Image (cartoon, rainbow, N blue to C red):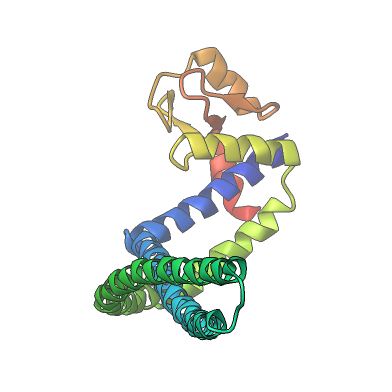
Length: 242
């Protein structure tokens, strides 16, 4: 158990170091991630606009061909009306002509509505261009700032992450799960020493009997107030040798 406690406290020290490095970066990682997300969204919207315009052009060309074909058919039916011998045949051709004219009228209305949508989409696309450029410029600037901060502490961060990897494989899985759960709930502090008979996390008084039990290093003890894992001075002082 003593070694398990040392490993957990050592992991806490490493994670605290990584947290400090993260704090030095401030809101930059979050800002960069937000800008990247917004850029992707705008780029996706731009592609949707461009696809709609392209598809509308294809659709319009197809309708133009269909209207031309219908008009040619109408002219053919009109010429045939002069050749028929019965009223029944004449009326049948008239119905065909009316149906073709109705179809042309319907297609023209559909195309007018589509042209209106295309016009609005083109306007939206024009507005989107400068917005994307502004976002792109801001993202480049923030990325440069983040890369600068990262480069200043890159070696230290890599060292800490390597240490963390070595520790994690040595820690009991159930201990690690408990550690991660407490760390997430308690702002990154899962394992704390007892200072002047008080929890190093919430600073509430630790009962004398618990302090005596803690010094034995025979079991994992959590603060009765905040739930953090408590360790003795012996663990704290020897953690660096793990």
